[in-house]
Image 1 (cartoon, rainbow over the protein chains, first blue to last red):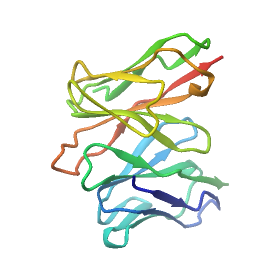
Image 2: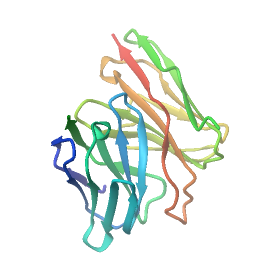
Image 3: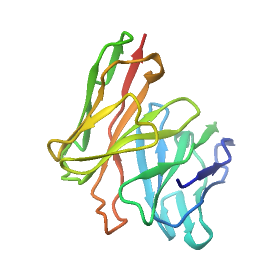
Length: 110
Length: 116
């Protein structure tokens, strides 16, 4: 099956700092999503981004499908950005099965 | 619009007991999923369904069964619970169809299961 690798596994940021999270995948995908899991366990979709670039406030994401990676940018981080960030992908010739990476644990300190 | 609702939110079982987790969505989504989340291991797909009456195995299906008798409901069953099934279980749904890659995965709030 497809391999999904996220880096770094852990990240500690001071409030106001910028950061980049990476998601590498081993096969062609037609669905890539980024999620944030807050400290209470709730999983919220951030982006649906199988290719191209999107921005939502202080967050933005870029997927280069031909090179099989996606990046999530957090700018001017806030303590509310703490949590785990996951990327999930679906292989182009599969139906239904979304595969998750292991996640990046982000802690933003005041 | 409730989205994806999981019941129960918490449950403690003894080894060998059985139980069913219920997932209900009100978005008319075709695809539904059950994931488990264990510390340091991310989310692993247990079973999924691409429509009413259909189910398929994910990465870690052993010890679980599922049913999708109605489009809005996806049930996860444990016939004989084991301590290794202690985990947080998440249900999710999406309107994704076979021929397209669109639509966003929506998660329920999770169900924490402890097997003693």
